[in-house]
Image (cartoon, rainbow, N blue to C red; front, side, top):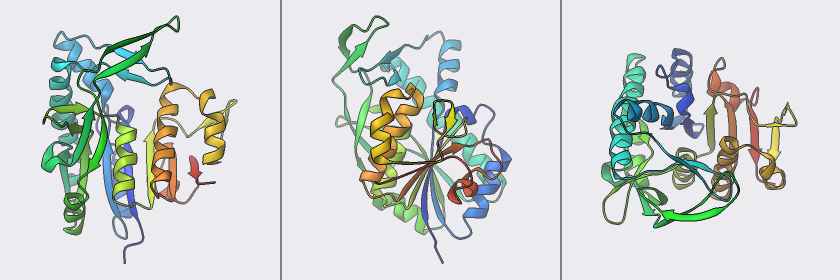
Length: 272
């Protein structure tokens, strides 16, 4: 009997040596009664490999405080190579090694993720001055191929999804991993969205916050740092689309996914 449909976002900070055995075994245990879709990051490895290839990476900050990679044509080629190739397949192999039937996909495959290309970006420099630049190869997700995902899940496989989307002109686009996870969770009507990172959860005034409502998130979001702010915006988007709970927790902990689902660690965000 299926208990839950869960979307898990595995942060890039947890993947420098591939997913931990602890995490994979925890996921395997949960798969006995649940269905899981996994979205992964990996931006730091993209940066490292791009540098080795002689392509230094540029990052920009939006007026809302989001820090993101500026993705020009050469960068999207490297991004696709590393994310959909090296990192995605490392995760697939780690899953299969433990007997999990994993399938690696990018948003390009079967047009799993469609996105609208951003024609321009508004950025803020260190002095707070705004300027408009070309949008490059970044986008905002507009559609998720739920039929494809549902078919894969129904066959007993675990989709491992790279956050690269297809543009209106069939170009690869860099889309934010946390926002991708929220879009997928909402589209497939997941019961839970779990954002695994390298910290215990959301901290305010130096203290871990075990639970938050959407009202409390909106009231405090400007006090939160860039990385966590992106996760909170993703949480709000997922809850707005019908996901029952969003959990932000450490992927380095013992039984990271199952312990979060039991509310034993991390931060639980709900509507309210």
